Length: 347
Image (tube, rainbow, N blue to C red; front, top):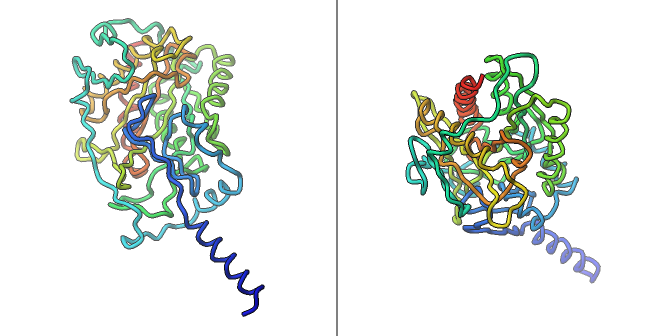
């Protein structure tokens, strides 16, 4: 073998080693602010597991070539076998009942350091009325629209499982459509914005979604409530993914979680945060009464999540990436029914 051939072989081997390497960043028990106790962002294939916006500058932007490859894989059928498993998927009921702040079927995990008076928040009047006319009352949108779910129930996952999709029939917009259906059936006007704020770049998603919210509020001043619907991601250090699940009426449902911001920990220009939180605790209480165990504890962080833009802002996580579409859809049906019940009290 001549020198040219040897050099060629070496280059091919080096390329193979490079493309097989995983670069993994772990943010374990990150305190400001976190949507899960552990967040893992795997840079290979740009599969970002719900790192909060404050970490976006740490993560590399999604380049168009990588996104194109992932988009093409959306239409492929994943043939998964236990032998090709990357990690386990386990059912997990994430109990709200051990939350550090609770009162009368409201459970809150307070990470903000603020003193929270749940009885006062429940008594506080919501500052708006819902009109049942032709004007939009609710805006549903998605800061991380491409977040997605498992297409089948398994106790393991493989590298080919897609965690994000640009097809709005197979990402968070699909969950938003369920809310739209039930709100409109109750005579409540809705706008559903399906803009892919996290595509082609994840970085800056909240900045882009803020512009979307401002646009709709300007064009439709009748909007009272803005709901940013996401899904969570819960991965432990041994690569096991948790599937938050509850069985209600014999039906498996993904658990949901409200994530709320506050003017604490250096966050400024957020004077309306307690009005948003008042709406959130009433919503969680309604879910707990109608569907016990559906809602995890509200997570209160030192962050804005664009909730400073209205006095009726909510961020709702529906399941996790380990849940199936069916489980997430069942959760959305229940959570939207509870929302209708709450808003009917404000007509």
